[in-house]
Length: 72
Image 1: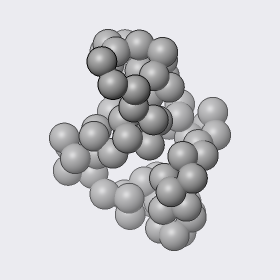
Image 2 (image 1 turned 90 degrees about the vertical axis):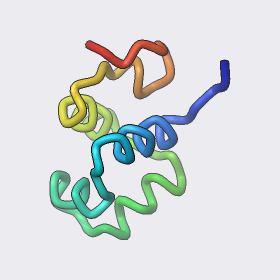
Image 3 (image 1 turned 30 degrees about the horizontal axis):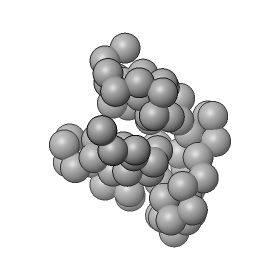
Image 4 (image 1 turned 180 degrees about the vertical axis):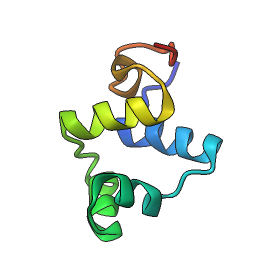
C-alpha cells in the first residue's frame, strides 16, 4: 500500500469525476492560482477538506489518509 498525500487523493477524485481546479476555485470563492498553491504545498484547511468530502461524498478520514475506504 502506498502513502498518498491529501492533494493526491483529491486529484484522483477530481480526475474520476471530471472536476477541475477552477471548479474548486468557484466552490471556495477564491482564485484558481490560490487553489493551485494549496495543491502545490499540500496545505488544505479543515474547512477545505470538509468541503471536498461533501463535494465528492467521501469521508474526511479518507482524504487525510487515515482510511483507505472512501465511502462515508
